Length: 273
Image (cartoon, rainbow, N blue to C red; front, side):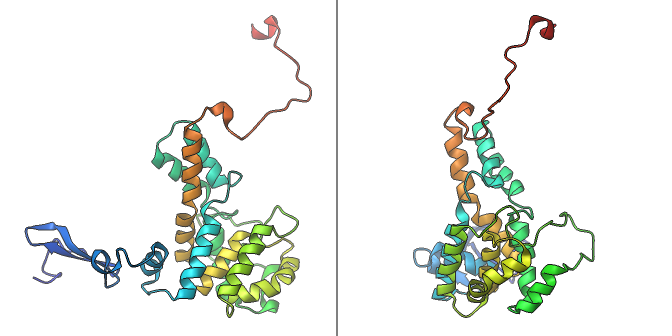
């Protein structure tokens, strides 16, 4: 019986299953993009290679694998100051479920201020501007307004740049340098050379979202694919910090301490009345 005749068949260009002979709802073999996952990939492919295969449908080159592994580490834990990690920590210390902590991290890390949506917008910028410095300068000076109603509010800073810092942070420069060494012929290498000129045009230093977008563009990820992958890659740090906070009291939560400079002292009985 073909898939078109089998009412239990799953239709996907990504995934195909062969049923067990005695149970059509259980898979005897699973194929991802044509590869037998449990027969060919398990124990042979690396996790990051499997991610690349899932998203792109292609087997990554050694350079693509190395670059994506570096990017995954760079994005895995943006730290407790990041809104997505902070949200997960708050959920953890409050005793929320694991799913709640991760959903909080996804919600807080999805936007256009250091979040996955900013990576989407930066990827669109790479697609539109290429590696022409004059084009970047023109677009940064006069951003193209949206042509349709969007779910997201328009960012008040150029996507891929840090709206709050005065200079490019060291981890951003370190990540860019290492990625450009691995992929020396694309956007990353151009960005490493043109970074200071772009920062001057943008009026802001380069952010990690800008490096991530350049890397994902070099790896042939579309804006929507890059946005989704960014959400996924940022979850490990949020999960680890949520677990850490779940083991301790809210009194030990690292944010925020109130330091009153003019504490009026305890309220009088009349104020309580």
